[in-house]
Length: 221
Image 1: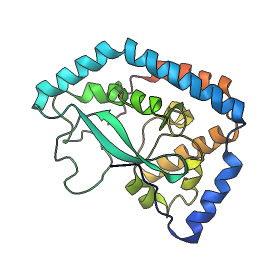
Image 2 (image 1 turned 30 degrees about the horizontal axis):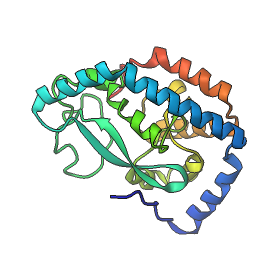
Image 3 (image 1 turned 120 degrees about the horizontal axis):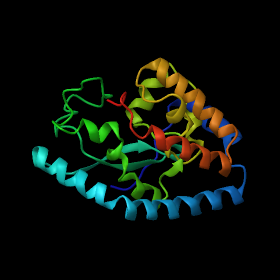
């Protein structure tokens, strides 16, 4: 299935998308350098982390014998949808009742796979998304279209974070950590908008360095 664009939800959403222009890139030079760093880092990451990725794949296969990877629609830059890649750490019927956020002690998580989620190793396949240009190393984390729709009423400015390419890590992840309630999402949105208003390569490098000691996240569900 090819990437498609999320459909506007009335004039209010269209206005939000127009206001994103004030949050766009500092310039073409910034965009070119950021993309070059993304490509190099993704290639190096795939090579260096390939043993861990192979181990995760074998481990997940041993846990339930099902597919190792899965893809899921996420909302990218300017509302375009793309398939994000992750290691599967939940049961095959995890969303038989529709899209839902993970919770503490979530029974859908595969036996023996909580560590994969807590160290964020399940996110490593997104290095491929970075190579494809669908994601960047640093930026707002991409949300599911269903979650965006659900949060519009409580967070009317949520479309503004779609002004840039979503990231593997970002200011919200470093400062706020994992959260899936409305208040937590409101804080994440505030951090995302703060990042968008003051982006630079130096700040991106700083956020990458700050992410390293936070790779192990005991609050991750």
